[in-house]
Length: 274
Length: 318
Image: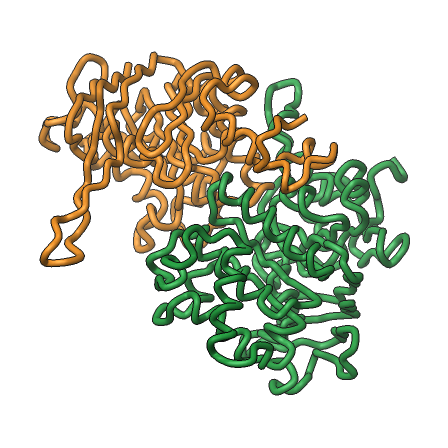
């Protein structure tokens, strides 16, 4: 469904000295993989791994320096915005910060209807009511403004907006990272329900391998713009092959591990955790 | 070492922290956990005497060897204690560091202000040694950097070096690793634990992450709605919680345990805004076990250092 081939993206930093050339940042280096329809595909990496760059390229929000992105056989890169309408309908993105991605001056119903307006899809009022129900918001939520909602509810609004044009692929970029633990579980449950109910292909980006393990079936691990490991999520978590993935698994504290005696020193030691 | 008794923090009429009491023994590592809006950072700020202007504290905060109560103490006394006997590592190192000063000078400043270093040259040497202790890479070069030239993890190391500069008796860490990558977080947690162990200092560690608190601390205080709802040894509270909130939090954060429909055990609703918590038990509007009895504020059951405030504790009257 989504094919990424030899994808690279080089950013040029702004000039820091008139004498020296502008520094180049290789945000993504020669990354290739394929996401089949119906998959729950996780992308894991730390800051600077290139995961957000990858999302922007897949969503046609940025152009690669080299390589290609195809969606259902159609090239995404190199197209003008006008010729990306197929992607805007079929692929929608939910971002980490629900506050920053919702216009504070718009009512929730207008926020949710915005992709429908942009794509001239009729029947907006009914669709908004349907979506509010699907994401578990009260029917009168449409009349209110984003600031009147909690972080978890705002993420529900973002999800409703993303689902409005009936996309086939949902890309979620760190959707629960800004949420409290008790709310995180609600949103992860909702996300699973929606993926199932609407038969979505999910691309889930996170710095947290344990969250990806819960949500996804396949995972790609990125480090400094390179793809270091890809495979079945359970296998990657239990038997990571790349040293970096091993480090990532080991460094993340777990409640079970800590209660069985794993200390802070053990998180960084070479020794394998019990 | 640190004794907090009946601490209340309020913004005008609005109570934000109510009747918080706990002790941190010498060399003990205590975690303060809770979700955002539970009052954990305010508790730390009150202990540190750094509350915003329009927020007031009542109750008592005592530090061993200091005759006066830190609540209501003079700024003069507090500023002598801060950075020497009491130290703090904040969540956001970019706002805690001075952007226009080289980081090595900021560490040296901590030694100079409290007159723990003989002269500028000695303070500079101490600063380099402290930066090496927190494993800042290439101290000779990065020490001369300004905060914006460092990564988040490096800044947090500098902040830790400043906090440890005068061998404090009590170190307070407020979500020190929340913004960091897991591999960097692991290194910093290790440095914090080593730092306090070497100095036999007491640690009050604030976090929302149960796995982190279990890794770092021996004892834990669970906060919700501005109150401590449960406390005890990490091994007990996090394996057999008594308070329904603690239980809910543990279940919600366990990504490996799902119900028969493959769903996580979420807590209903969201953390209310300050002042919107229900009367009586603060958790009752989200609690699956709440009944009429919970309209009355539950008393503290158990010992001062290990107990809970719940009318219907897990494993109690089911």
